[in-house]
Image (tube, rainbow, N blue to C red; front, side, top):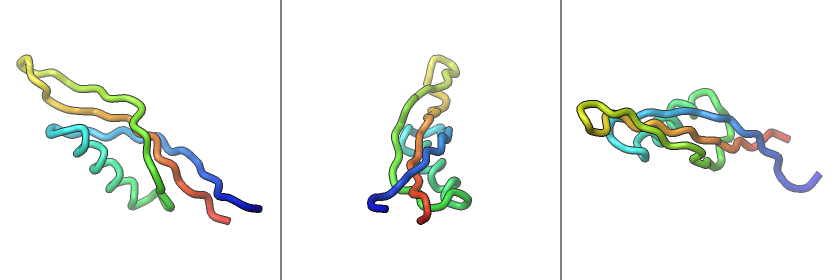
Length: 69
């Protein structure tokens, strides 16, 4: 069979610093238990407000993982 097959894993990451840090953090943690991660898609971005300022970023990402042959 030609071509690759993938599955989606949906993850949520948080950061007090930035959206990018939230993505980097969740991917680093996922790498310990999710094999063959190849790409990601940010599907939702949210945040928490404290004292009228951004207190935390939260992102939902779908990660494409290549299935083994």
